[in-house]
Amino acid sequence: MKQYAGIDVSLEYSSVCVVDADGRIVREAKVLSEPDALIAWFGKLGVAMCWFPRRTEPVRLSSAWKRMARPVRK
Image (cartoon, rainbow, N blue to C red; front, top):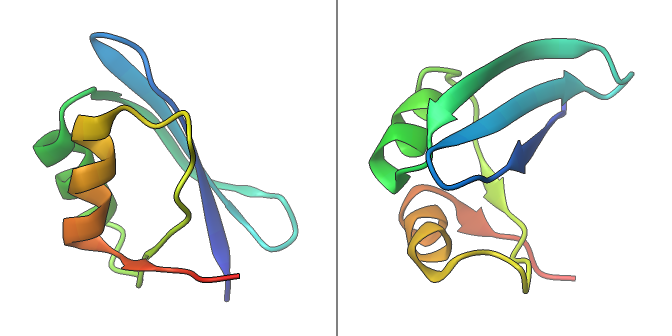
């Protein structure tokens, strides 16, 4: 089943929410806004991750996503 994640990044903590294809919340949490903390949190989900690059991503998070997920091309 497909799942989608949204991240609201702040200086100290990021709010993370994962929903299924029907829009039901699968999991949500506040996670330290550090690449390793976010990678660990998503790693615990046990699902394949895809990275959708966004122009507004902080550079340090963008490089972290490249380490953990495969990019999705349009």
